[in-house]
Image (cartoon, rainbow, N blue to C red):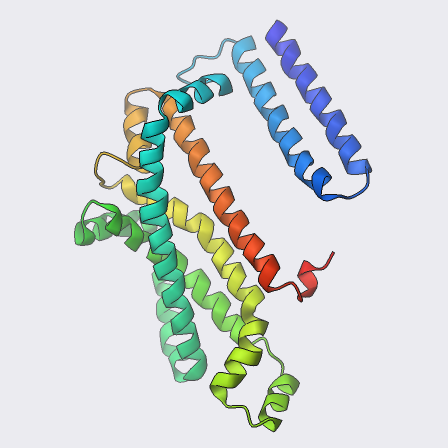
Length: 279
């Protein structure tokens, strides 16, 4: 009963603190504190409910049990992080987004490609990753290269569509002005069209951050060496070590959030002039 009261009290305390933060002056530390307080409240409620109702650790381990597992399996989690995030997701993200950007510029330079390549890109994006992953694993092997190939398929189309749309964002008056300066295609691209396209390009990059991690983890379910987040999750579920599964999920969520935050930070630095970045 004491843990249930603790959970209820933690929820009330967290709610009051967040209300106070919301009614206070807007500042960077208040923006940072609000999600931290909310997250800490959820963890406290989770701990209290699991212990208060004596929920089986196989069904739902407590946050302290997950933290203990993370401390005991730090080497294992690091090896899985390197295999899945740094090798599989990040390499596929760079290759997929880079290829999509270059093809988008080619489509913009040669409009006839828009009628041919965009429908193909749409078709590739509609392919189910559950069906493509085992095929790519067979083609590229069981190591990280096949996971990177799955990630390329997943991030390519969002990046392509956003970049093509962004390159068309400059209005006719701006293009006419560049023509009066006798600017050719490439100078217009660098000086006008790419800066106008940056908000769209970063939209594609941000969408790709989460898709890349999901693609790399899902691909490992269809074959991998004895390392990787997807491999660890699938085997740990079979062994009923759910605390390790939750530890892998936490590391994956943390990595995905950090990756998204880095891209969003770069967007703020590059597109500081855009109205969406003004406060």
